[in-house]
Amino acid sequence: MSRRACLHLPMRTQNRAYLFAMLAVLCWSTVASAFKLTLREVDYLTLLFLSSLVSTVFFFLVLVARRKTALITDSFARPGRPLLRSAANGFLNPFLYYVILFKAYSLLPAQEAQPLNYTWPLMLVLFSAPMLGQRIRPLSVLAMLVSFLGVLIISTHGDLFGLRFTNLLGALLAMGSAVVWALFWLTNVRDERDEVLKLFLNFLFGFAYILATTAALAALGLRPAVLQHVTAAGALGCAYTGLIEMGVAFTLWLKALQLTEATAKVSNLIFLSPFVSLVFIRVVVGERILPSSILGLTFIAGGILLQRSVRSA
Image (cartoon, rainbow, N blue to C red; front, top):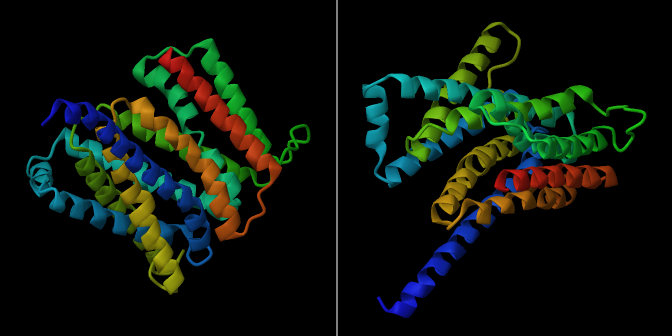
């Protein structure tokens, strides 16, 4: 290879990283609309049951394509702490995380649920102190206050002094999902196994949990069998959620992280997602985007960016 070609290779690789990252961001920008449309057709447990099934199959096929199925066999042939970790993480994500998130979306407009769930980087800072022994700096506290002001603006439709929440339970659930995601991320960060293997095992266990939950509720007569009354539109929405939100987007993002010269070069692109998502929510779902949603999201994103500047200092 010529010297000139060698000089240009890193740039081409970084451009590929940007491409994969932007595709992942585009995928994630559509899912709030997909959640809301699908929840018009099915309930939140059915959405999780079918979408997690699709994503489990997807990650299995990715491992097959990469000729890494031996990793699955090894995981079950020598069960131990890593497999127990997958069982615990699978309870956090996808099971608990999406149960809470989908329920929040069933109660809130998409333009409210999506940015409230987006507070997970703040939860990550809060839990990093006790779990990783990291010190919370004064500027980090300011960053969190800025973002939580955005939460209040969205949840009250800008009525900060009246504090009349449009749906307090929905807002608490949306932020609760951010807490669960932060806990999942922190428990997963020190697990050095293959990333796709971890995702497959997480979703395999998560699907087992949602299968057991829906079967138990059906046996008790508290809900119908999970596949009853699923419309074609509902099935399509579940498949889209499992394939795009839970599967393809994560695979694209992992690829971007592998190719990039520095994580920060692609990680900041994720801030585009909630704003692009508002466009899809307006056009596809038909929600009228409130000024309070845009203002609140801006405060949330601003606080997270401020927090990132603290970490990089």
